[in-house]
Amino acid sequence: MDKQEEWCRRRAIERLLRGEKARTICVSLGRTEPWLYKWLQRFHEGDSEWYRDRSRKPIQTPSRTSEEIEKIVKYVRLQMYNRDEFCGAQAIRWRLEDEKVQPLPSLRTISRILVRHGLTHRRTGRYEHKGKLYPALDAPHPGSVHESDFVGPCYLRGPVRFYSLNTIDLATGRCGAEPILRGKDTVVEALWATWLRLGLPKYLQVDNEAVFYGSHKHPRGMGKAIRLCLPLGIEPCFIPLAEPWRNGVVEKFNDFWRQKFLDKVVMESEDDLKRESLAFEQRHNQRYRYTKLKGKTPIEALVAANKPLRFPAKEQPPQQPLPKPETGCYHVVRFIRGDAIFNLFGETFPMPPEVVYEYVWAIVDVARQRLTFYLDDTIFDEREYLLR
Image (tube, rainbow, N blue to C red; front, side, top):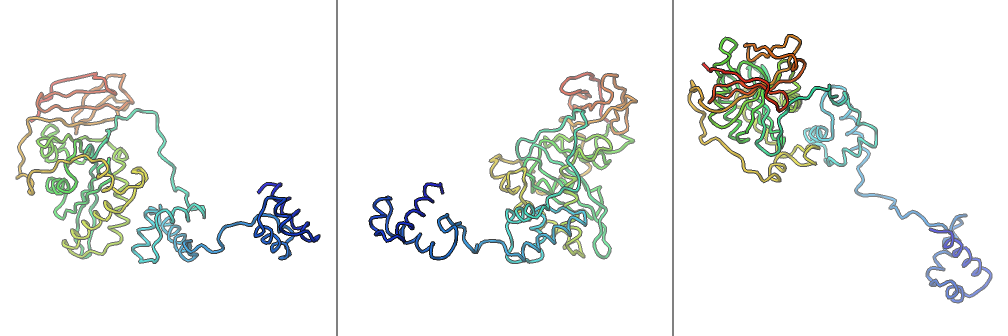
């Protein structure tokens, strides 16, 4: 309130106390009698600054988070941080939900509590670019790029050993977690089951496990995964050797999967494993909210994209052994070190000096039986590549 209004209030009460009539005072000041008697009451309360405005903030806020809930959120966050677990607002809310805490605070409320108490410290900093241009795949819409990776061996009570083929759709964050009890040789069945739920991708990005590409003894033989992908119009992409962070989205999801599923859910049989794995997958896709998706869940991001997905035409995967494809392409990325060698599944190719200490992208064209090498978007070598 400005100084003029405060002066007007003090002046009105002074005149009233000297015996001037209330009506005369109000007419001269352009105020009402209720206004005058309001400030007279404030004056009689004895406050030396009675003429100043008071805060209109309510004394009690019914919607304010209780002190008990704040303490629980702080305790859970510190506990998860000390265990080196995911400890963001979403992970904390999942823990509170699992512990059946009531009332369950919203993500926004948990975030505010963390900020209010200075509990937003990251254990490690963000990735710092090393200056080398990496030819990463773009994922503009659902189904553009899937990242897949095997986790395991893991164990149920019993013990029963299993693996999990985890897949992430980069555009939407949707996950697929397909448990396998018979080992990684069942990669065809695992990929097929995942695609029945997530849809078929344009690119499938994987690491350099032999289960994905075939065998070091037969680097041109095209393994099961390649033979499954190419007839479906899927182009496998193999990340550089010894650089798992290039599959960083699914690698981070693997840690989340271990913490929120493998370490928390009790499973004693194959039926338990399949049921709980699917429940975890659905819970993640329907309820987990990502900052990169502007607070949407993976399913909400899929709906917002309004992009139709492709799915396998049949429920059952094709019979094995799979025939050698006659069309399609697959991609291999390698960092060329000082020896100037491109390692393609055990087969080596000499590289020119200008690509040393750079990332080189190679494309195997199955129909043309050609191997093409790129630096950035420029072809610097092409040669015959007979597939056996």
